[in-house]
Image (cartoon, rainbow, N blue to C red; front, side, top):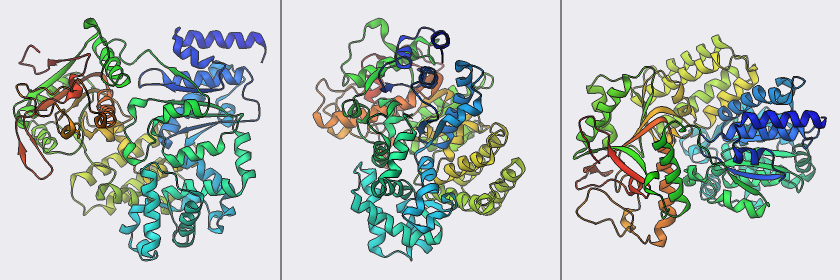
Length: 607
């Protein structure tokens, strides 16, 4: 590309980013390895695409090499892939069609990347992997006990070996080469013949191939001169081991993530990975600084900024009085009182045309049931999304969908609107005798997903549609379709809502002992005379890390709102055994430096 064309592209990119200096620092950086702190709403995807465009234009991605982009779900990968195909050509010029760009950029998730490798090289470790890996049913190691045909084919020692590796991964310990080989050997000899594969094996097979066949590893290292990773903060230990395997000394890196949205530590996300890789890989760190989502809402803008400041300073930020954020809150003397105020607010908000509202909880609780009952009493239709990844109904439904989907589409992959509707109907028929709100909600999610794929993703080739749906069923991601359901009111856990957005969000149960679980270690736990719990001036060392982990959950909840967030709490709570407690307090997270609560109840005033 000529110098004149490069100058033109730089001017086009600069204009598109409106002079956002931090974004432009990322895009035009001379550093080959960048890690970008990119909170929700800060223009992460646009910045990433412009960086890729600039690297292409400046000749830093030589033909016929490709870019590898990794996300955590095929759904997210498809969204990014579409934006890349839609925006890159306009930045680079007409000679770069979306098709040619698509040929240069591979965007997938970790399992999708590994499946692509196994299709080519899986036969090196198992003849059974000459078969299309997408025709195997994927299961979690701990789910095998619930599959009679699998449990009986494994010895107790073999089953324990598989579960031990799963535990290692969840606790962020990378299995050594010998352990990986032993694990893979069990899957190859016992599960593949039954047309099953484990989630972890999909990655561990590739790690073994890279260990035993270095020429394969070197091929991928040279084939992808740039690796882009989104949501990097959620990377677990074997995904990181995979990444390290395809990074050579020459590989350019662009990692994007938000350290304050790391809420998956309990399933193996590596702690502090965004900090650790800076030194380990000589990366330049850039923090995006402008929040575009809340640019017209000063208090939400301040709330986002001030919560982040508390996280960065271990709860000791200096915030001027004019910069304090106002956070609307409901306080009930009882949980019923809290629920009535929350539902009254929902009714007010529903008067606004076409708005969607999410009511979020840290976990299932008595209060969630009371809010549900109050919604029903007031005739407000809502979608129930309070299930977790481990619920038996949730797991079984995904397993059933996966089995029926592979049986119907696995060999032909002839996916069209009519075939998908028939598939959805067949699943509904299979559950005709089932009762319970979880299954009912999952059927609604399946219908919403099928409609989304049939209409909005109609242009996808059948193979991409197949990969998208199979990935959702394999990884129990139907909850991500909550953004597609018709209901204007959604009930969900915070973890289930990650990655989704609604116009308004009400975060319930923001109370001591309910939203954070480390109150027993806190010197402030028994402070009398106030319904507000504040952090101690000197936070005990053992509290710091778990406090920050829980603050991440609070931050994720707050930032699911596009327009406004509210919180609610009450002086009453029930523990898991149904025991009642009174004298409750608002959780300390809602009272950190830089946040001031204001009454949100329609008939109340004052702070």
